[in-house]
Image 1 (cartoon, rainbow, N blue to C red):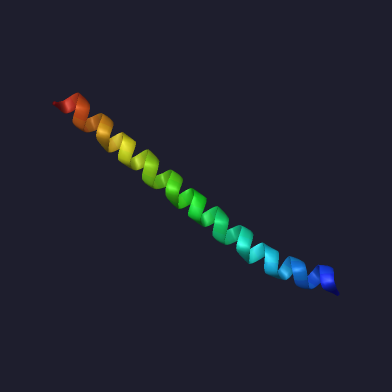
Image 2 (cartoon, rainbow, N blue to C red):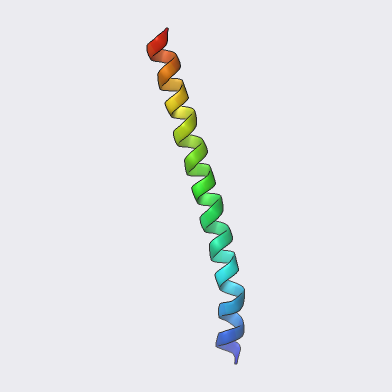
Length: 42
């Protein structure tokens, strides 16, 4: 009983952490990509 309850709490937390990590990675990659375009175009 405890393990099922614990898993039901743990899975949404993992998904939330995964989405935050992917969001940060996407922002970092897109910003560095834009920075590279600005540096090369100048």
